[in-house]
Image (cartoon, rainbow, N blue to C red):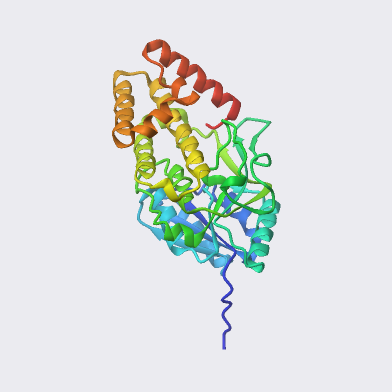
Length: 347
């Protein structure tokens, strides 16, 4: 009689793949050293290259660890939605197919998860560090949080320290409890880029207990000419960026924060400030009459849906810097954007 191991995996890792044959192997090989404590969900999102075959080969070679899931193309959001729905692990992580992880750092994170489970002290979200692994750069920018969060202890929003303007929690360095993602009703839009911002935003409304592991775990690979964060591509997809921004504004406008920790709302506004600043800056970089029209229309949308939020965002240093009037204002925005890009290396 076959004995089935019913012990849940510590971590489900979804790897959304669309025509990823050139780089997905590096990603998956970086995850495999974690062994049976994780499950790797390779989600083939309607690929037309060898991605489906590569996914199936991994599943057959590593049964019990790798699962290949094939679906019609729905975009990154649809692949993440499938991952959340199919996950069996206690915690959930997205690793994009062109990124990778440090196996030793992942082992340390899994050790922390195991201790939390053994002590019956689950948390809602785990945070680690990530690296901007930019093509051609010798010195990689690492996003660390050892001065923001207490290390190796459970904490809440009140214990969160000050984040600098260049620090933020992204899909790359957050690990949500799987059931929390389901309970909060997270469903990312289909055929839309930049939905990782929603993933790192909406579930926070359900987060109370957090845990920080000070390891440089996730390598966020940037600098490829065909990436969604390439500046020219972002300009071409600005309507999708605006769509994501509006969804995030709606999340804030429709939420009653009276029973939430004030520091949670403060952080969510800070995050939204950075996202809307990027959108305003990109529209200023475009500089066309259509871009100016879209920028004005977006801010009218914010004001009509949540006037208090509108004034809050427009009065921040970033909000003011990227919404200066006229050609001179757009020029200042361009200089500021390019300077920030050089310092942080975010695309």
